[in-house]
Length: 79
Image (cartoon, rainbow, N blue to C red):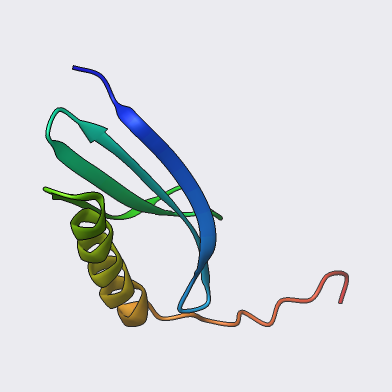
């Protein structure tokens, strides 16, 4: 089997720049959200429809990024 109906879009999720990639293999739709900065996968989901896979991956990714702490290191250059 091969991936069909492949697509990718970039957007911000709770202030984090992310990429959503989706495609269909056979009768299943797969969706993945990854960090644009690091390329790390945040969440993956499968569904019977594209909408179902995207809904599930967005819910999981949103829950995960909301639990992630951000720290301002306050670093200065040359000082």
